[in-house]
Length: 424
Image (cartoon, rainbow, N blue to C red; front, side, top):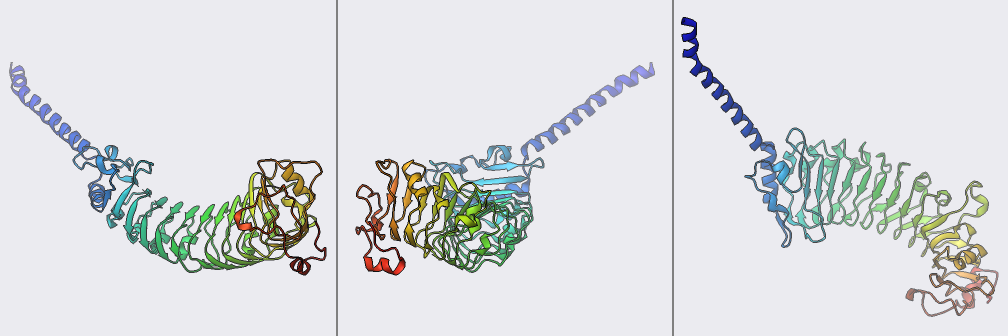
């Protein structure tokens, strides 16, 4: 009797306890649902937004509602990790119908301490790159392209151990490239093109780079010693000088552009022994010497060039005969040099069978182009032979305006460079 009475007496307390436990759990769950992002990261995103604005026509920030229950899933451009910390931040969309963002980059970016990728799409963002970004040691990708960022590349970037890709192209950055960047152990891609960077590169680049693009700056000095891992290299339109010996060990190159500098000396023959190097731009330098002869070529090497290949050696001081091994190149510019002698028949055949689509030989000292009897030049081919020590065939007139209107050189000039005289 007593036991049943006691049980009846404590039943309300038992149900009250269950109710309280349920209420507490529900409150905890509700709180967790409301806070699916770190409070520190949320404050940082608010500060970042305060420094940026949508350019008219852009609606990137329209989803950044700071009262939303889950910014990690509702904020455009924000990706969070398992710990509800921001790991990827993409500012802008990069879409053709979106003009991007304006404003500046907030130092509060450095409060996103778990950030691995920061991407700023093209827009009108101005001001410096916050040096505090160098504190984010988890960075793998920094891409801040096609804006109006000014000032130097932060030296603090040289302390980012996991940085794989650094792309700061098409801005207005000044100063020299921090030497520590060239030593980063994980760096594979560095694109700093189209800025106003100055100074010389370090003598040795120890970072195992795959892709290095420094074109359209004001960098001076010689080419540094580069790692053999490089596949893509462009330093075009700078103020660099000296020999090209640093290129001799780059056997994995696919694309090389050192044009429009002041490089001098001979072209390393190893460049022509690399069948994967299908884009070679050496034009508008002070290169001299001759082309490697076929005798010196590797006997196991079949041919250089192929479909889609392009070689530009124009506007240099290269002398001697044109050797046959470039005859398989699809687009070939040898104009504005000091080549002499007869054009090898391999080139003539390559042009007339359509393998070579463009062959520019104007403004040299060539004495003969052996036309095949009864052959017609394909409509798809551009061949220019003007201003050499010969009269070019009438039917060959696919020359650019820069070639001028004179069909041949004065004979007096030809006698200085060739012993073969002036022939038709």
